[in-house]
Image 1 (tube, protein in one colour):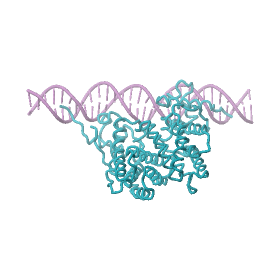
Image 2: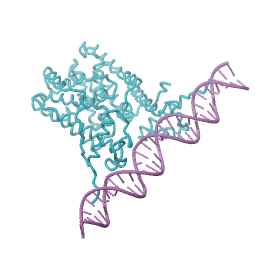
Image 3: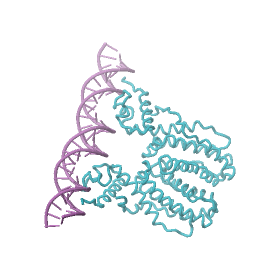
Image 4: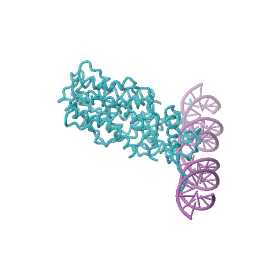
Length: 217
Length: 217
DNA sequence: CCCGAATATATAGCATTGCAATGCAATGTA
DNA sequence: TACATTGCATTGCAATGCTATATATTCGGG
């Protein structure tokens, strides 16, 4: 028995914030709502303050990453798929470096943990398939291998996207992943081919879907 | 022919800022100088604004890391030393998580690049010694191996110190480094022993030297 | 059909932030 | 000793995030 919130306002503001992040405009309470017609109070109704906006932006970042993962097709070569996932991870981070920074530069809360777990799950499943395909030792723990793959991807993404290392450093991904997967049982020659094959999925420069989810209303 | 700057003021402010970072007090222009007797203008004379304070804090972070590296003794086992360097890197990041975040959450400038290169050089030298000791293939590029080691260390540090992964994840460092060094020629059994040996250098909980350098006056 | 309550929204204002401007004080040099 | 140069304290300003209050709007029940 009252006025209802318009979800379009929320998505509008998130998309605008993501855009401002992309063009490197400072995101302030007033600059965010400027031109949208909505008042500053909308930020409090829909996000409970600017902190909520940043939290929503973090979610948006994980959402876009998930969308990128979803575009990948699983092949008969699970090691290739694993490398392709990391390649996608890096491509996403480098296409949206500012958004990537927002995703990791604040203390993780429960909501972010869930989002991170969801993306990690993709890696876990790929590792599991690789183990069941006989590429890895039977006693390999998929979660551990997923975490290690993530560590390599995130380390590279962080040092290249907003850090000191140049773009070419990304190529180090191939030998590192190969070394990792060989160490858990994969045959060196075939592993190298698989990783290089998956690495070809690295496609920079396509911003990716700009869609945002209303999510937690 | 004028009044001279007192370097003690600069050091005092940096140490105070590092302390506030440590106890998680918000660092503002006024809160930084509060209680020190100096006025807000001192921040402009010594740091040219708050941005300069953050830049100095980043330098302080690299300085402390360098101090930690300097405490390490090089042994007859260069692979062990390499692992020990990464262990020190992680210990430093986890003992000063907020400072570590400051070091990497801003766009790198030339000054930071130099500091980062200086710490990377430690890894390069260790990799070089390992190659010359015959542990790695003769055509291994020390810089590349150093970068890859750094990537693993930074990835873990970032995901554990201010990220979603729990502290136990640090143990993944041993298999990852072992896999990396085996992939460039080291013998698996001995490599594992060397890495585990160097990993024992991981000593968390000791804040490390609180000294700060006047540095670039 | 309409009225009331609940909720969104608009406006104004507040404390705090980083920073610039100005005037004063201190100090090294001639 | 006189002066020029620089550090330093004070004041003030624009911008920030947020809150308080008043207004407008919409949904539910009679």
